[in-house]
Length: 99
Image (cartoon, rainbow, N blue to C red):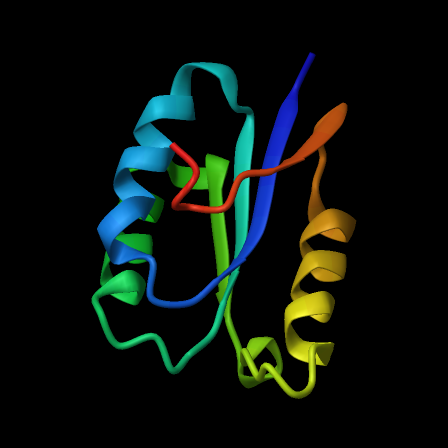
């Protein structure tokens, strides 16, 4: 069975690496939609993980994934886009701080 991990993300540099490494033996692919206003190194870490995992790690950085607590459209749209791109037999929401 192939498992796809998905999730929206903003400022998750503290946890992302641990989360990916803990799940790596079990996961077919990771797909993340990243808020471009992340300013804690998340974008750099995503680039590093992409280099390390290649096609298994996909991330998009787009204004449409902006996190606004008053308007959940960006957050919800991020989920929908990630699910649509997933190729696994099962899709699992693994937020980066879920280790």
